[in-house]
Image (cartoon, rainbow, N blue to C red; front, top):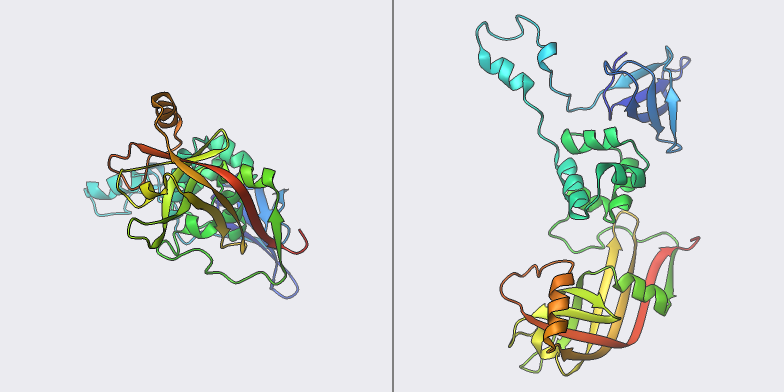
Length: 306
C-alpha cells in the first residue's frame, strides 16, 4: 500500500463491503508512501496514527502526482524522445486553491509553519496543498479559511463577481448587538469600508474606500473634488462588515461622526507611512479625510447556540 498526501484512506466493512470510515491522509512517515499514516477522519475531524489493516485501501487523488525521473522506466516513451523525460521531471503546477492559499498567506506575512499551526495541520501537508494540484476536503478548507481570516468560497474562487451572502441562512440564527469595545476591535482590522456622503450634486452616495484606524479615528485617502472628498466638513456614516458565506455568519459595524480634512503635514506623513495598504483605485490620492465617531454600533449573526 502506497499513498500521497491528500489521498483518502477508506476502511470497509468486511461483512458488507460498505464504507465504514474514511479520512484524509495528512501525514506520511515514510518517503515511499508506505504506512503508517496520519489520517484526519471525516466523521470526527480528529487526526490519528493509522496502521491500515486488510479492510482498508487508499483512494488516490484525481490529479495524480507526476512521475519523477526515478520512476520513469525504459520503454515508457518512444526511444530517443527527450521531451518525455523532460516533462516527467518538471514540477507540477499548483492548483487554483493552492495558489489562493499561498497568495493570502504571503499577503498576511505568515510563514507556512505559522499557517499550518493555526489550521492544525502539518507544514508538509500545507506545502503539498500550495504546490500541487490538490483537492482538499471541506474540513481542511474550513480550517485554512479560518487560519487566514477568509472564506471557503474565496479560497475556491467561486462567486468572485457576486456579492457576499449567496448561501442559505442559518436554521436558528441569532442577531445580537455589539458593544463599543467589540466594535472598535472589528473596525481596527482595517481593509475596505463604505462611507456614506452627500455628493456635490446633492444626491446620496455610498463609496467603498481603503481605510485606517488611528487614535480611534477612521482615515481614508481620496482626491480633491471627488465624491468622497465631499465628506470633509459634514457628518457622515461609515460602515464596515464581514460575511462568511460558508458558515452563513457575519458582522457589521456602523460609525457616525464629523469628517474633517487632515491638513497637518506631520499627521499626513504619519498616516501615509503607517498605512496598511495603498488605495485599490490607484492614482494620486494625497488628500486624507478623518472621521472621529460620535456613535459606534454593530451587530453580529451567529448560530443561536453560540
